[in-house]
Amino acid sequence: MLGIDALQEIPSYGQMGLQIELLNRIAAALETTAGTNKGFTALEQSIASQFTLMRTGKVYRTRFYRYSVNSTSAGTKLDDNAGLVCKPSTDATEAQDDYAQIPVFQWLRCNYTRDASDGFAKPSVLEGLPGFAKEGAVDVGTLHPTFYWNVEEHDSYYDIIISDTEHTELGLVPWCEAIRADGTIMPYWIESAYQSVTASDGLLRSQPGNAPAYNQSYNNMIIAYQKKGAGYWGAGIARNTYAILMLAIKYATKNGQTVFAGCSNYSAQSRCAVAETGVKRVLLASQGPFIVGGCVSVGVASGTNTDRGNSSMHSIADRVLVKSIETVTVSGTNYVALNLDIDSTITTTTDTYVSTMPQYTGTTDAVIGHHDGSLVSNTDQEHAFRIQGQEYMTGTAVICADTVMEFASDFAKKVYVAPRGTKHVADAHTGYTLIGSIPATADGKNGDYWSGDVAFNRALGAYYPSTIGGGDSVGTGDRVWAGGAGASGMRELYTLGDLRAGSAGGPCNVHCWYGLGGAVWDYGSCD
Image (cartoon, rainbow, N blue to C red; front, side, top):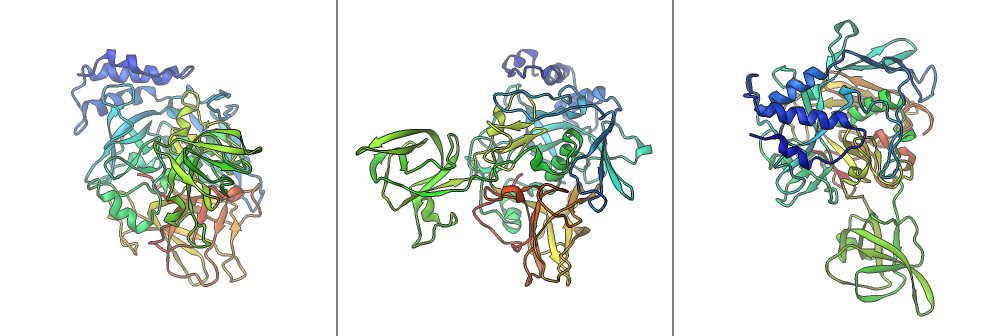
């Protein structure tokens, strides 16, 4: 049995006493729990009992104008949400967070496995208890109490509503990731905490402290995640939807980049200014956007091609961290030295390039307590952000594993989502649910545009851009890259944007250019 002594290893979360108290209670319950719910482990039973006791029945509502009526991104908090303030924190600054002690917004880190029958994520051990790990053959997730939600539709506005209680009079339904394929509503749900990396066992896993796995595609994810066993398919669109909902409720906005810029403007490639042998650094004429703790690759062009997709661009140092930055003088000239976190020395020439790459996973673990936020800054466009325990926008875009698009004759994109328990199918959408269509521009040229609103499918926890907007500061403020006038066939759902996205990136960003096998250096995935 796991004892209370194990809690001595729990990190301090400052004002976040509710998480520590919850973990204490779960650990104590493990001493006596025998798994009285059918099919529940002792850990699941103790989590279930504590989450049930935490329920308050309060209703958190935010109202938004429809874009066609008013283009503002800001919403109005109502009901038990009225008057609550939430501002993102960093590793150095703890901002006001009125949601910090509200039970339905709590989360705990855990290791998890997926059930072979339907892929439901089940906790194996909680952070702070013996056996929790962040590396090796494990996945790290975020454990949440189940919530209920609705998008209440009206002519000129819509309300996004959540509660920890079912409130049938409000039309609330349980969050999809808490529902088993047989319809069982679980008292908890787990989401992968980080983008997938290639772990020490060679498999795609949710872990901090590594470069995000790249060259992912809808098709190859089916094969890659199934290597972990039945039930593993990769994270679907619901992982993004949850971020959109929390931005709406906690920050009263449909434009995510008004709060979190993510790693969306960290793109640079510079030639080395000085040739050196046997060093652990590169010397540049100027610093540019390179930052301490940032990820870079060092290599050479393929002919004149410096695309990051070329393996030669990573041939000297592949996705390593910048340990420090300093000014050094060589032959009377000042240069900027990027000191690299590498074991072996390297040789550089003036034909050597250093390129920024997507940031390592887990940088948001440094954010104070259990608050939302980013390392260093939430708005410098160089750092990933965390919301409700999940990390987003590392500089690698994310391909949704359960969602595909198909062009109609008018260039609208039909969106299909695989329900839980449905086998994912390469180059097809057999058994998937059509949830709606992303609109096309009226000029018949399938032009790109800014999205105004998104529409939601509650049963599948899905969304899609539903109206054409007018810029990055109105509506959702994210870009729909539509695919061009010659587009046809099926597309994978690329979301969030990469380190070059700028203001076009964000939770509602959609890129429709690549087929289901499209795999590029900035294409990542989540478990």
